[in-house]
Image (cartoon, rainbow, N blue to C red; front, side):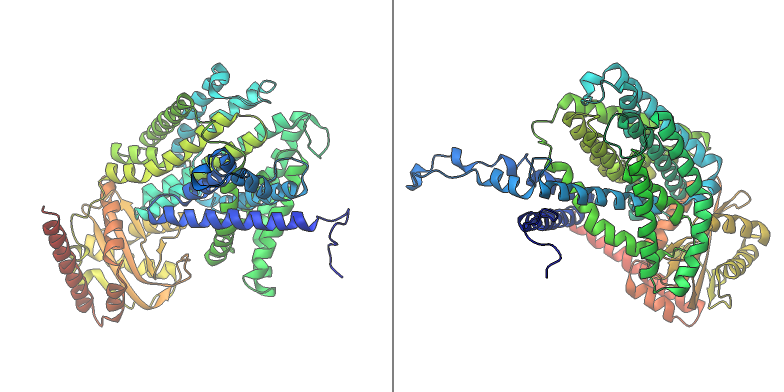
Length: 613
């Protein structure tokens, strides 16, 4: 006997189930295809996913009407239906009480909640706290300046900007939202940009990531306040306790999850890993906690996404959640639920009719000017160089998926108009596409020398006895002390403090521990080759077998970025890595690097000749 009887009053009709499954298949399929196309073109995948929704929504598919075309020239005298709009209305029904529409909307809400779980997992509270004053200055100025500009703009020119139906009764909520929308930073986007530029493990990269984490946390707390303000008198299922009561309970929930709840989860995860199947048991616990927190905040009238985000922050801060488990959760959600959510943005908005040049330009200009200059000022307060400060500013300006999620939720809550929603989407995508190239240009990330030029046999350690991170780094710092004349303890303290902020593992069995030292006169590189490998908690689960200790003078911040780029470029080849691992001595290993440098130089000369340079 079937679990769901077709046509039963208490079950979803078979026709609506068919519509639901087909709609998700079409939406996910096209979103993934276009996302991969954009990735091949070195553009954010979210651009293709949103484009899929635009193509399937009223902008394209819903606007197709073959009946208006005169087909007599081909001998056809009959009437043709509006095939596109009929298909659009079948896949994505418009009546809000339609069973299939309700089910689709439910799946999209689930997708948004899981997407925010991933964003929360990326927030490492310990790393944020350890960054200290530098992170606070960049994050604070990167929020205050664009937030003030955005909120002022919304309160003074709300009608011009594009306030929604519910903004008239909630001008404060509208103002706070616009301020948040123009000051948020997309942590996943900026992390990907820094990885592409080989800067994710640099001091500047860690500062940017930590500041973005803090921005995300403040931004979503602020958005919870906005939702509380506009939920009063709405359809919240929770108690009628007023705005102050809702915000109060939400802050208590937040404080509990980030303190006692965080501690409890840290204690629970080792038990689950020991007693349950791995990684399935841990993943199940993560999802149960996330959905429970999401249900609580939805009941309070905030939104399920805030509960999922807070759960992600609390869970992700535990080092018992291994990187491979994080990656499994990330891949599952980002390749199934995230594309559906981003594609859904275009399903109810006509991007052509809602496109307003003045609104788009105004939003983009205020977002860039406020965010870039705010973060630049914060970086200067943190005593960074002009070049690094501008790079931090443009990196933090990338809004990507986070800005789009904010806009979509505000649009669903009728706080903003279609015109402003379209402007926010364009601004978020534009800033994400701009950040990487501008940072690369500002930092002038061009390789001026080869790694082998900085190494002698004394700089290479073959199979040190140390088998774990701390002992290995002590051995490498001792070798660096012999070469530089600095105190071993001074070097180790700098390297270990940096390693505790965030592990410096790279893919393919490599790690790049590093530090900036006041007493150092010139950059120094120590290379350790370990056949057994050392666990640096790499994303791909591999032990580090090639470990590079990079020491640079404090007053040469660009040198550290150059060395990280040199390591990434030199060891990008599987062949070079394999030959280094097979080398029997320091001399043989340096010979491998010399040959790789010669081949790289020859390749560059060949490219220059080909281009006529």
